[in-house]
Amino acid sequence: MEGRKAEFLLTNQYKLMLPSKILTWVILFLLIFPSFFQISHSKLDSYSYLAAKRKRMSEKVRKMFYHAYDNYMTYAFPHDELKPLTKTFTDSLSELGNLKLEYLPEQYKGSALSLIESLSSLVVLGNQTEFEKGVFWLSENLTFDVDARINLFECNIRVLGGLVSAHILATDSTKNRLVQGTYKNQLLDLAENLGRRFLPAFDTPTGLPYAWINLKYGVMENETTETSTSGCGSLILEMGALSRLTGDPRFESAALHALRKLWSMRSSLNLLGTTLDVVTGEWIEHSSGIGAGVDSFYEYLLKAHILFGRDEFWRMFQSAYIAVQRYFRHGPWYHEADMRTGKSTYWQLTSLQAFWPGLQVLVGDIPAANLSHREFYYVWKKYGVLPERYLLDHMMLHPTEKYYPLRPEFAESTFYLYQATKDPWYMEVGELIVDSLNLYTRVEGGFASIRDVTSMELEDHQHSFFLSETCKYLYLLYDDSFLGDRNYIFTTEGHPLPVLSSWREKLPETYIPSNWTYVKSEEQVKRASAMSMRVCPATALECGQGQPRVESACHIPDSRADHRCFNDDDCGVDSSNCRRRSCSLAGYCGQWLFI
Ligand SMILES: *[C@@H]1O[C@H](CO)[C@@H](O)[C@H](O)[C@H]1NC(C)=O
Ligand SMILES: *[C@@H]1O[C@H](CO)[C@@H](O)[C@H](O)[C@H]1NC(C)=O
Ligand SMILES: *[C@@H]1O[C@H](CO)[C@@H](O)[C@H](O)[C@H]1NC(C)=O
Ligand SMILES: *[C@@H]1O[C@H](CO)[C@@H](O)[C@H](O)[C@H]1NC(C)=O
Ligand SMILES: *[C@@H]1O[C@H](CO)[C@@H](O)[C@H](O)[C@H]1NC(C)=O
Image (cartoon, rainbow, N blue to C red):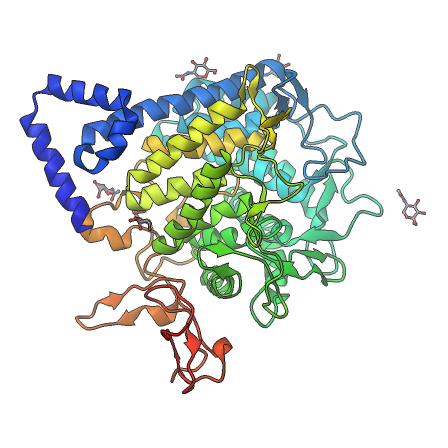
């Protein structure tokens, strides 16, 4: 902090001394000689340089978004997603997430999925006219009365979340976003219609929803009863918001019931598995981590707490988060472990895990977030993009999962870390991401997924989340004017929902996000995140002067308050440096030098 303050003063002096013409030349020079800039970064880093970079980069990202969006609108709309290499389309909402595609319906002609996903991004980019056009097209033409078997989780985060968020943005009068004239809550009506079609999925002995449902006919005969933890545990934001907006409590209550049931299935270590059976309520896959099949479960516990202000969500999140830090974390990496024993199973880094540092920013655990973010950065740099799976124990790519389907998670974490720290380094990370995407994935007809990161061979698919998330987070990194002085949480699909006091069960006792993305000054840096005052309870220590000391949420207390132990398992994780403590020969937990 000290260093940055000095730097800031220095650059202000430069500004005063330099006539503006010279300054312009300096900036041009910097733009032309980026490598020179890197050497003398700390010296010449100036406000104007950063402002110019912001402008240049936000313009670049804007172009990316429109290249993807316009090509979708030209070659694929109103089908679901664009195939950018052949300039055709795929009606992928049906059977999305099902690699086998066994029940592909013939009648289904798409739900304009990529348009729905683009609406909130259009608002973030400030394109009111195109937003309105999309809203009215959907209002008149979208129907869910279609014979399509959809994945409840995917349809919830992409379609329901997209509609609910767009509805809120369309009616947000404080931002002048009110769609003029004839908007009569049509998007909300569509969302409600969709939400009702979801409800039969929850009609199981456990209340845990089926993973698959036919929009027209409900749960199909002989439907699989297997689902994932994220499939049951990441519905609460969208369905809760839908209930708040419509006054119909059934959506929130179904999602909440499922979430509570899921939580009740945790092991004594507070760990969950990855897949389970919705009829028997038994786990199928006991190994889990923070990536595929589980990721957004953790995300939604914390975000539900922020959005709905319910302590129950915080208590679940806190126990779950501590268990993750304890059993999955290994330095900056996260591996998988068996929920019953806590023993590690798979040592793999997956591209989806890259959202975790962003979540840690919301918790207030910036050092831990920065640490793992940096590891993802190195892997990104090594391959040019993030491979889907990387074997940590062999430091090599997974033999088959070598693809990069334009995923947003690394950009998302970079955005959060930049918001919390304002460290310009994260803008450079963003630039690396933008440049890689343009270099490897941009084709004439849009942006294509990468099939193999070693050959950069492309695949004919532009996922809708590229529009709703990847472009949005990259844009917000350089231009966050959308955020204004509001607090938003972003769903796991990148759709913003405002944090409203009327939705909160209870106003927080401690500091809550009134302005977290804007708290940037040196003295307030500790409050940089919404949750920074709500780290693990044992860590909010009184340390004189009535000032609570805020410690890292990686902290795990020793199992006994007197720090006595029989073996290493009795010891926790040190709050000051996040290192594992071990049991000494004399039977005390600590960080002993011989370790
Ligand atoms: C909004 O999007 C449309 C479609 O891409 C484009 O033609 C128009 O120029 C955009 N408007 C603004 C203000 O960016
Ligand atoms: C609904 O779709 C039809 C056919 O594509 C189109 O002509 C019409 O303009 C659409 N409605 C709106 C409000 O855009
Ligand atoms: C469901 O399973 C039963 C028993 O295996 C079978 O007889 C029936 O044809 C199946 N129904 C469908 C629609 O596949
Ligand atoms: C992140 O980590 C790097 C490398 O350890 C360090 O130089 C940097 O100051 C850290 N940034 C923050 C915001 O903690
Ligand atoms: C948010 O913080 C910024 C910078 O500290 C301040 O200028 C602004 O007025 C704040 N907004 C609100 C709504 O508190």
